[in-house]
Image (tube, rainbow, N blue to C red; front, side, top):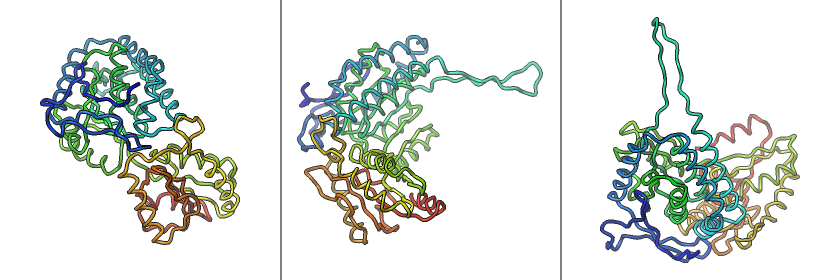
Length: 408
């Protein structure tokens, strides 16, 4: 597969460029996180492309009112099969576009196919309700109906899983979709568009506009033709999306960041806890919204857990991304690497102690564990989105709960 390519928008069942396409800002670069080498260019969409995509999806929605559950189920099942058959291409894109270790890439492909089959099963599960009333010979009935055009914003870190989740259920319930992927993953979402087309999904049902969310995100969320917004990303951007949608009372589903805590209690199996904590904190170099970025350990278990946890962390492989044993890969881009360096520097200046890691190897940060982190700095409260976790002792369950809740 040639990764040095040009990715275009997918609108109304065909690839298309910006109109006009001769602007000097008509494209953006896609880089490999491991090397920072440019591996592709992508069309840099504008409000015009967003409008074309929403118009296409709206027309497809009008034409789809006669689509049957059996048809929708067939499309989704065929897409699941196509993803599995095209696993090599998806695997390559996950490795090269987002620096995914191959084991994680394989899990994404398997999970995406499973989600499509779950969505296919759900086409028969849409049920309304009949409600009692006080009026004789009268009944109230709630009927579930598709909304229309769904705008979807999947993140970079699990792009195949999220792109499938955000589109498959929308399609299963009779909606159409316009997706604006992360600028790190245009190739992967364009591949998904090909997969849906191969599965028989009619033109206009699934559209992809490439570009920068800072430039065209509001054009999509605020478009009057969009009936629902699905967003996965940072809390700051999610808050902005919520404000934009509130202006027109548009329903939204937001999945945002977390400052997750793993609590090791007094009666815990510390060997099991240490193994799971290492994976939770550092799988895909901590770039997961569920990563355990705080590990609270009962004071009676601090020493035994600490030794076992250190051994687990030091054994996490940082080898070639195509090696199935590799767990920790590169940080997604230069801006995030700078952010991590800043957070670590602030923490150390404030008195935090680096117990493990802290060293950079190219674009990879070794799994890092800090102790004695003050509770008034960003690293304590804010999501890191990197291979950094802090260890905190506690004496009682109440203290542990209080610390778990010390987060924005």
